Amino acid sequence: MNKVVNKFVQAHDRYLELDRIRTECTSAAQRESIHIAIMTAYLEVQHHAKQIAGLQYADGMDFAEVN
Image (tube, rainbow, N blue to C red; front, side, top):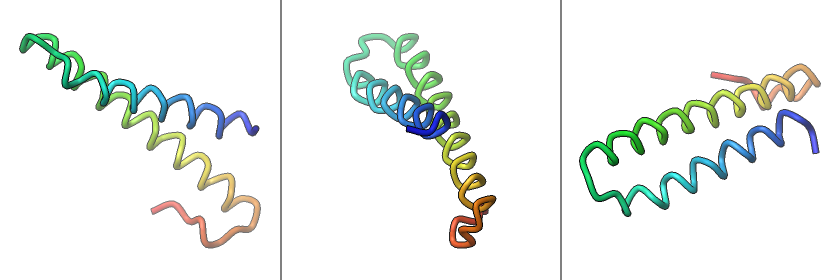
């Protein structure tokens, strides 16, 4: 698997795991730290998705333009 795609999959899996455990928080501080981690993971997923789209565009796949 392509290195960039592999990083995307790992980031997405991390995001899904954080989203799953966010309902198990017992304190406000814990919820806040989980939400920060979720947002960080979300931005990482978006970053890798844009990299993948950029690679597709560089390969001549015009339908994969980055917004």
